[in-house]
Length: 98
Image (cartoon, rainbow, N blue to C red; front, side, top):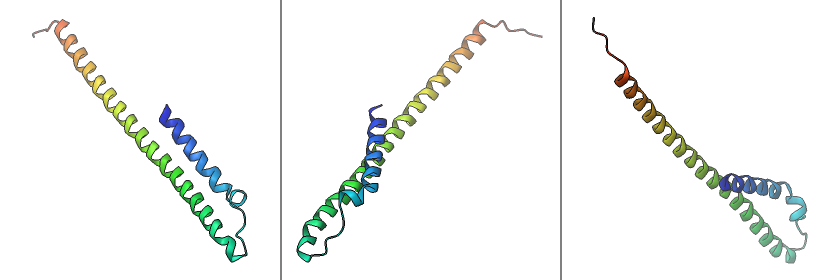
């Protein structure tokens, strides 16, 4: 449940950051002296967006691994139950010889 919440949060956070670019970063400054801080702010912003989507992808991969492991365990348990039920059925059923 925690992985699902983390995946959803990181994905939505990345989308909000991506769509909020014009309001968060603002327009590119015309003066050359102001372009340095703007470039740093833009770089940090892009790294934050990339980390957000990368974190969401990692959480999704971990979530799929857990789901696959749970499916594998459930399949193994179902097979064991089928074999046990079949063995019990054959032990209690009288054989008819013709």
